[in-house]
Image 1 (cartoon, helix red, strand yellow):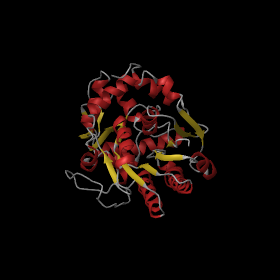
Image 2: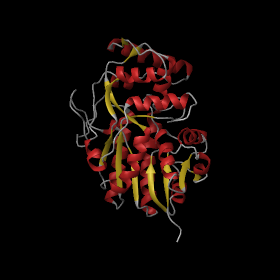
Image 3: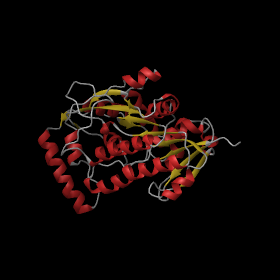
Image 4: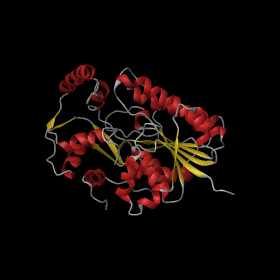
Length: 340
């Protein structure tokens, strides 16, 4: 009997491509891609990490499918054992709210339905810390903090929370699934997308930094934990994936130094951020380009937040890499050098 394969959605994204590296090292794997997606980033990521990249890349079975194409999703999941659902639209631009709702919520519903229909053994859904509830500064946020959206909650956060509800709905209908909630994922990916926008901006050099704090996690840790949780995680459980809690000042400083640049020294005041997102909105409308800062990111960048990885560490004993590790990895990748 032919061994069932695992399948990755969002395979050209930061998380998806790193999951592919891990899975291909174990055997053949299916990967979904959209017709317009650029798969060259996967080859770059594989060559960055693995000297046997050519052999591993041959183990990927690429399948063209869109999350909104129910028939294509069902066909892709025939004979699949595990689904790693990493596909999502990441944006804080309000102009992309409808696209995120369709892809992140509707697409997840379609993935869940196809997994149920094709008898997939288990699904690992990639959510976000954006779907975790709020807590006062200095209090570690964990998986049990209740969701509480307000008028400043971004469309991205709302969509990720609603996508989790689709997974929970699937579980109620008989699907075995586990959810991961990574924070800011730092790792090689497509230029200008997701956290690569931040990394590339700091790489060019900046004297400014936001006043808030957040958490970061290395993409390698996300992939490694996802594979372990697929085997050991509790059904319906959420697991925060957090490498390090730190201020944006420290985050920018670590990245700057990895790229051989001086760290930022000027804090951005709230009024500067308020003015900045308004000016960027006008510029984006006039030029049709992406805004560098939005109302949602301006609001988020002043918040003091931190997250706990205690739950996943208690289960897996995983040792997360530091921000310094992640920054060095990015410098090696963008510098066209081999990873250590």
